[in-house]
Length: 85
Image 1 (tube, rainbow, N blue to C red):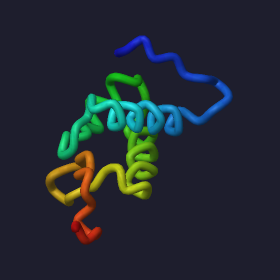
Image 2 (tube, helix red, strand yellow):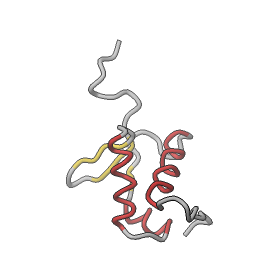
Image 3 (cartoon, one colour):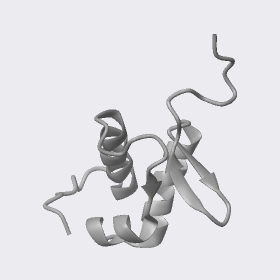
């Protein structure tokens, strides 16, 4: 468990999503890094459903991708659906 303190005026899942966004932005979680729901659940002291709401938000933003049977990973910086030139 970290020293993370939740702001009581905001949903916990939003705050977890913000923390994960920051980790992706600063390189703590590089492209293809596995996002472990179990680890986040333990780290933040929240229920799995709270972690899943946070990861769903990041998935919608294109920051992470989820592969059934494998897990969720930080998206590559170059999106596969964007032509590269």
